[in-house]
Structures are given as C-alpha cells and as structure tokens.
Picture: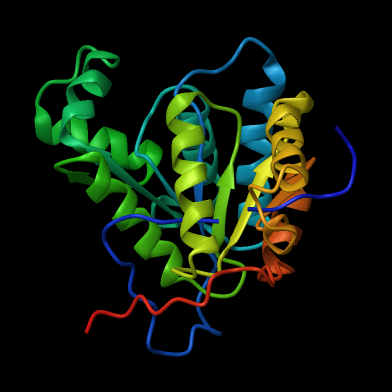
Length: 242
C-alpha cells in the first residue's frame, strides 16, 4: 500500500533510562524486529540485505534479537560482512540458545560456537528472559545518536508484539525514538489500515496516528528515522524513578 506514510509508540513495567550526555557524535543505533524465518517470497530476505546495506552506507549500528536464522540472521550477517562485528549487537534469551545451536550442528564446543556466531552475526549477549532482552535492546537504542529508533520488518507473532510494545512506550512518553515498518510487498498493509480504523473508531487519538511510520524501501527506512517527528498526542507522563 503506497499511500501516505503512517506512525505509532510503547509501555512496560520497567523503565528505560535516557542518555544524560550529548549524543550528537554517536552513531545511530537501530533495533530491528523481524522473523526467524525467510518467508515464502524472496523479497523478504532481499529486503533484509538491502536494509543492512543502507545501514552500512549511513553508518548505522544494528541491535537485534540475536537469531541466526531467517531474516534475523540475514540482516545481521550482511551488516557484519560490510561494517564488521562491532556494528551488530545481538541479545538472545538463554532458552533460545539451544535452539540456535541445534540449527548449526558440528560445532566442537561452546567456545568455538560463540566465536563462530560472533564472527558471522556480531557481538552477542545471552540474557535470562524475554523482558530482559527487550529492555536491553531498547537501552541500546536510547544510548544511540540522532536517527536511532526501531524498525519492524516482516515477521510473526513475536515481531508484532515487540513492535506494539515500543509503540505503546512512545505513546506513554517513555521514549521519543522513531518507529518504522518496512512494508515489503504490502506485508503491513493490514496493520496500517487497522491504525486508520482505530483512529476513526476513537481508540487511537488522531495526534498519535503518526507514531508508526511506513517505509517502502531501505533508504526510506533510514530517512524516516532521521526525519522522525514526535507525535503531538503523546502522553506527557513522568517516568523518572523517584
């Protein structure tokens, strides 16, 4: 759906600290949510590669869920090949590590496995649970320079859940970072229409309709993040810990 761009924001029990120093000299840090499957259309994996190429071109660092399969692995692998290990930071729950290891049989030991993964997919941190994973990924984004934010590519339940959480956090004033859906082959047309429907039905305020922004190609993803404007309808709440 190549209609006018669209936007949304986030909320969770734990707070996210904002950087206390100027971030003008820092690289943008973008958290990408996407599937651990390749999808049935080659366009999805191609989009993952093109996003990594755009990140390399614009010196953007990637934070992601640490997976090595499907689109998740493709965007990380491509960016590491272009920008090096330090440009990619993965955060993966302990419970998913075994699943990832079983997908790569033949590794001699845990040390060799970690080295192999980091050389191909970037620096990795193993965390105890999903909430810690999301909190750490968000923290990395908050510490990034101008143009930092969140991008959702094609994915399933987990991708949508992560996207909706950061949208809610934005609406509640926990953060003001950009949120973009990379809409490949109309994958997110239904979500974009749902936002419009929710606005017309009175469940999303018109001033918050622009929290989520649509992009149709990788260059537009970066542009939308760099030019992101905070929605006027966000709640002005104080989330600092007393």
